[in-house]
Image (cartoon, rainbow, N blue to C red; front, side, top):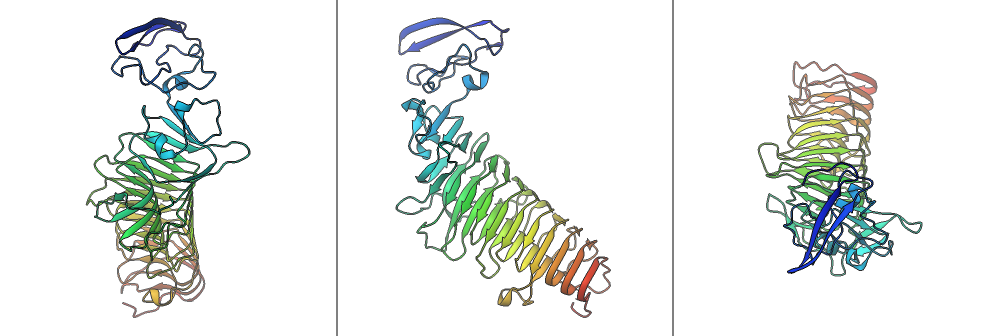
Length: 424
């Protein structure tokens, strides 16, 4: 349909079955052309060029004065906080709204508690909204507990509270609380997941995702997995609490990158500590990551880099026995601050906390500050000149496991022994 000048007219032919209902002319006051009008989904064929089919309009909707956004957006409301919305646009369950016909562009979730699992398979925005002095829409576990509703590309089973799967276009989720308390998942072969993006792009922000735990170390708050769509996923400004495997997990079962993730400004904290888990952020293979400005507290490892490429910078890790664990050559680690890495007991071969475990001779490790640790930076007889320009203070050992002949220039304050010899 061609765009017409302001105040131009646009004829819309509305047909119900075989009956010609009307041929009307509409003027527009606020947009260059009327591109759509709210009509009954049951009465208009979807193959009429330029005519978009939507659910019933909210009370007070006027096509003569509506903006392009109002005319082109299908919005559903979940809950009862917007009484002016007609019944055809109002739902009691989030999953019903996101899978309704016509497909929504926006699903607004009223404050309240929704005991359900949500599956999203089309592009849309799902957002919690404020009403009546409240601003907390909570997704909890259904009465029967969570169940297997997804699988990753490695063959693992997932019991996820929100699944976003193989969507062409973006799915954006914001301002919700997702709580897995009482999930009833006991099998250690099943991951308990708050939000699972599989081969889908979008932004996850301003969520509280909590209590993905309970089966001995398989709980993930937010999981992003790539695929043939090569999705872009942004995870920002979320509050992730009490996971027992990972706060954020990014991976693809691929030798090349099929996922781009931006992880920024998240607050991740857990009280669980098992052997080598949980990690605040776990970067696996097949992804490219930008990890910056996150605050990670507790667990076993602040950031685990097992694969992929990208950068981990300007994050703060507090009270994790291993601040950053580098097991891959493709991710640089710079300008992070690591506090209080002072104990890992029987869970690591050193018996003491490690600020940065640098098991790579290629990944750049520079500009980081490690304060209060058993070992500032553990080279594991692998890292070399790629580690330099870091600041280590209040450590029993500044460096450990440095290959013979390697010179690593860093700054030290109140360190018992900077670089003990004979450790490789």
